[in-house]
Length: 593
Image (tube, rainbow, N blue to C red; front, side, top):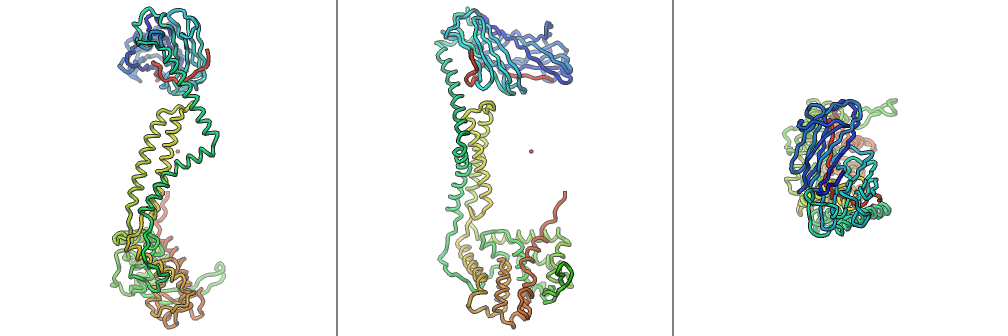
């Protein structure tokens, strides 16, 4: 590069390509800022000058040894054509850069980006020199800088020229070469921009500030890495604190249950006629039933007379099939199909109707029969669950306004994360990150964590939803009844006097998942004349809880239904460089095809 006496800059670039394969074109883009222009463009290779006038479209075909120039207000594009195959070629690009130099009253500032961040590949070695218009004394008015500081390089100044050398320049990393010399070396300013006042103090201050900012960024980053406990504590607080705070506030306002004046420990009878498929969800503040509710509905339909259950015995292998024993079982048949069922009970009835058919089926065989057409029956099970969910929603048991605030929180955190990460990553310097960019990216990551935490929190309905006043009053009574079913085998209170109440005990016990406790109570307290009449209890004369209805292992039966009704499985990521730079003109990038 040579600075002319009018302030314009003659630039001569030598670019070496190592071609692997067949190539025929290359280009060089040079950005322009306001007041800058480029002319006198030429392309050559060795002693051969290329001919102007070629096609400037990237990827186009052109006559070898020709070039074209395309100019706009934002850039100049130089395209040249050749023929190369598996070889090294060096091309020389020359042009005059006008308006790059800035002439102040005291000095001239030439700040050129000799390597642009647009280059997609790294550079092993970079050498540049800038010849002055005339000899200059090595005084404070003649200064040289290379930037940014994180690029490995050195600069030097001599009376006739300044030099820059850099090595191992990463991909997408710019290199700037800044030379300041006395204004008296120019004879005119026709090729430069003119600004009044002295420029040296502000230029020196700018470079010093850039160096201080770089050093300060390194100190803060090193300090964060040197105190991992403090840093991780801060990240945890930023990553989860806002989300936990919002979730706590939502729970206090919208999720925390408002207790009623109800103070009874036990309810000796079912407090309402609510179906057994609905009660467990109300008590646990849920909306989706499971296999316990399905099993309870089956036994409730037997109790209500839609089906008839007859005590029988079934032979069961024991000791690995070495011997067999008879165990109690129930033979279920269709009794009265006209028994009224709710919409959500109808899918259960369809499953059972299909299993028992016209001849009936033993309860111990239900799972095996259901699995014969798992696809059909799993759809009915899904319909049962959807029906229960719809019925719960229709009864207005829950108030769920808190979910809106969690959704809004997720949206806000997601938006903040996008903005912070976009800004932080867009300005990220991989070789030497700025502290501000580190903070932006870190805060963006923390915003992502907060959004994810709120998403997980939204899955926990008790956080943002509570029962209505009527729903809470009924839930407290059902909870008292559940405690009674759990404790009544050891209570000395009078047991139920009617078979209907005993059978309702078992049905709701199955729904709550405590059927074994109810069976234990029946074994201890149920009169013989009642269990002899029951269609769902059958306690053997020996009083052995391993026989009779308990031998059906109702808990295992419910889990078996859950497995059988599941959908079938489908088959089947001077000195070193200083400052941060960023103010130089020129630069740009290029490539080949």
